[in-house]
Length: 150
Image 1 (cartoon, one colour):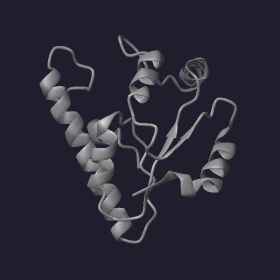
Image 2 (tube, helix red, strand yellow):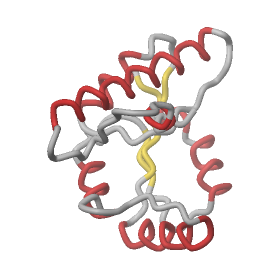
Image 3 (cartoon, one colour):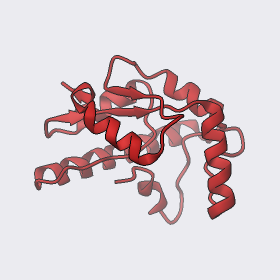
């Protein structure tokens, strides 16, 4: 489940997290996005599925999100490749698909700084700079006990 989908489903009026003109509304809607993704993850888990939720959640919001997902067990994996690798991957994706993930004032370096405010004591943190997707999945599965969150 991609947490970013929740804002894409809004036809009009969504204020993105980095909107400097309406920071309170941006924060309110970001909280709504997180709430909706936590509820969907919980519903899937309650129905017997393993739900992998992919989103950009930082700092204390990570703990809040995890607490909102009632079913247990829960795991957290933070993928944190180097800024240079993310920039290269983003450029390759943009060239291949036209998708722009970073732009304006929000850069790869800013995203990395945002990730950096998240407590490293929570979950499994991986530097995936030298890994492809299959290697990353294999490492997550091998180290899943480290990702467990009480």
